[in-house]
Amino acid sequence: MKKLRLILGDQLNHKHSWFQEQDDEVVYFMAEMRQETDYVKHHIQKVVAFFMSMREFASWLQERGHTVVYYQLDDAPNTQSLTENLEQLIAQYDIEQFEYQLPDEYRLDELLVRFRESVNIPVQSCDTEHFMSSRTDLQEFFKGKKQFTMEYFYRMMRKRYDIMMINDKDPEGGKWNFDHSNRNKWKGETLIPHERGFRKDAREIVELLEKEGVKTIGRITEKHFNWPTSRADGLSVLRYFCENLLVHFGDYQDAMDPDQAYLYHSRLSFAMNSKLLDPQEVIETVIDYWRDHSDDISISQVEGFVRQILGWREYMRGMYWMQMPEFATVNKLENINDLPDFYWTGKTKMNCLSCSINNSLDNAYAHHIQRLMVTGNYALLTMCDPSQVDEWYLGIYIDAIEWVEITNTRGMSQWADGGKIATKPYVSSGSYINKMSNYCKGCHYKVSKKTGEDACPFNALYWNFLSEKRAHFENNNRMNMMLSLLDKMDKKTLQAHQERAQDIIEHPENY
Image (tube, rainbow, N blue to C red; front, side):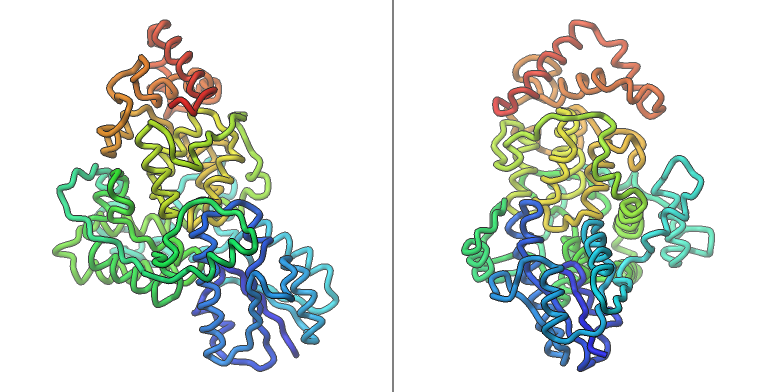
């Protein structure tokens, strides 16, 4: 039976059972399409990374004797539509059965379900064989519960896979979570090694994107593209992380610095989200290295890393499939303001935002605290439309695929879901940013000042937000202390905060 098998751009799993045996009756199909480059305006490095990774994966398949049809963006047969390309190939190759791996994005899942119903040949779908939990595990785990907590899911996953467990009940180190050890400010007291980078020549793809008129955001050094785009690259970055960065990863996991693009973070997220690397192999590699070097590396470093992958990453995917498609439009706080233009330029006098946004534009990257407590914090405090925030985050980050982006953005960052993912909104005044970074030292504004033209804008925005949205938080125990402080605030001081906040929201270009 002649089979056509589809491989999407984020399904580059070398270990998948599909590829273990060569079969002359199977044709694999991959394509660079305007359908995917244009549904949101992506960072140029993100498009380059996917195209380069897809091309290398297709070559890997061909070297192993598999038949591969690969459409580059400007190839004549490429209709730029996934379903039209599939219909064309089914007729061209007399295909008798179509097979695909279940997509991780809802929009593509729905597209392929509709396509399945429209064709007159058998269609089979299978798992991507990547994640450590299924689409429905989280739904079953929280069945009958009104509140969802990642920590309980994380503990269940630790037990299921026997990861850092003494026995079937007790975790190594006597604690499940070393989060309190993962909140240090980096003050230059340790040497941060240069990232494991690459010098890939991306000029051909950049020229192709320009020729075809693909609209992108961000910047690229096209002669020296710096991200892993093959399995070998990904494994190299993983080894480098273990040998050079793991020793302080947990310590400075939440730290921020204007002169450090990556600190001790691994830069593995793109390789994992495109499935070049498997989450279980990443976890096991890091744990094995820690066990061999436990005299030098504390348990808090490795547990913080494992929690991001086994806990948060798997949890966000489960929440995505549990709540879509309604989740994509939920807006419990009814925020409608526009995201300021400086999110696309980095031109603002607020140093924390300028550094975080410019790092994103330069590297298609920012770590989770920059995303949550700087760019996300400002967007929420200024009550921006969560759909605009979603679009920006989905476009600008190299690792952003909707299943992981929208849950972190609309749920965790913007609290648009009313607290299903985050029990309280992650908002702060300038004090948290100052506590976790060196941004405030080089800023036009003074974080210590609460009111006045040179006061940190986050300070006014914070109290204004609590005042504007307090009805949403009055029954939230985690907000009691801050609402109590709001109630005790001098009325003139609150009015000054509100007036300045309104000016910031209406005229962000002045700040």
